[in-house]
Image (cartoon, rainbow, N blue to C red; front, side, top):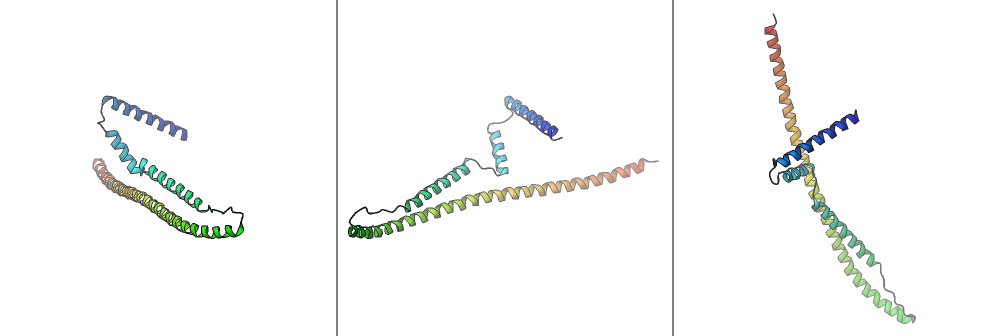
Length: 172
């Protein structure tokens, strides 16, 4: 049964492809028609184009750079002097210098984290809005189709009633 359905689906798809190819050859589609249909279809399905991929790649690049900045913080310069009193004085001075540099680096990293977090939120909000639009569109279509089915049901009941009346009239 499943194989029969797959075969039938493949046959239908082949027929559609042949029909589209024949229409293209005949010039039935106007310039830009297929692209507009494809983009409309993609938008209905909530697909996004290269922009979404570019946004995600930019976020990944920012996270990679952030990771490198954090790794750089763990580097501590050591004094290599063999004379202990001189080494202690130098390390004390270097500690102050390193603390100032660490403070500056931490501020830069905090700004980078804020930037990445803001961009993630913006990306997710855009995605959420797209999903909400799709959900609303689907809901509207379900309501429209439900109304059509209801009208068909009412029309069917009316036709059935009329048919019964006609049968009663024609029955001797």
